[in-house]
Length: 165
Image (cartoon, rainbow, N blue to C red; front, side, top):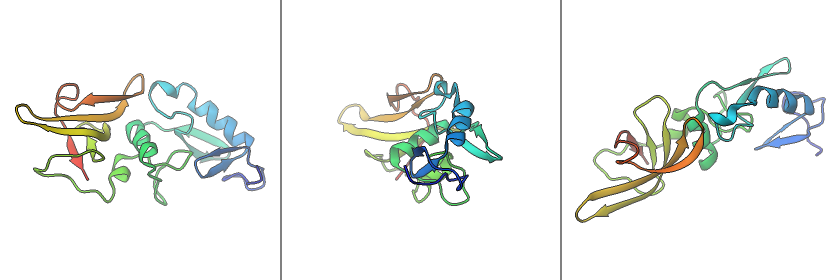
């Protein structure tokens, strides 16, 4: 790898995360900071931010938005928080440019956000049934332990939340 470290341009890059390249000391410090995060964040190896002076800090919140940003390929905007691979970690950044659906049923590819502080996902299927109304399936990051899950909006997710297109 001939690229230079994103934080230490004097050092050769040994690892690429997304579009960013890091030196061995950044890789090792980040690995130490993210150790054990697989229980709450996916992917967990990039769920950290550079704190300067060779230090990396694990991100404290935003695991569902981080997972969704990786799924959608949503990069963190300039001057906005992001993971070590450059993807967004805040739900508002993932929703940027989308509008909330009012009275319109969701369709595959729309985004869902729960009424809580962090839950979000993507609609994978929305079907109208003649007798039962709608069935909506949402792929999202299940918390503790963090794992990808597809759940029914009404049965498993309680019919709570909003949809964005």
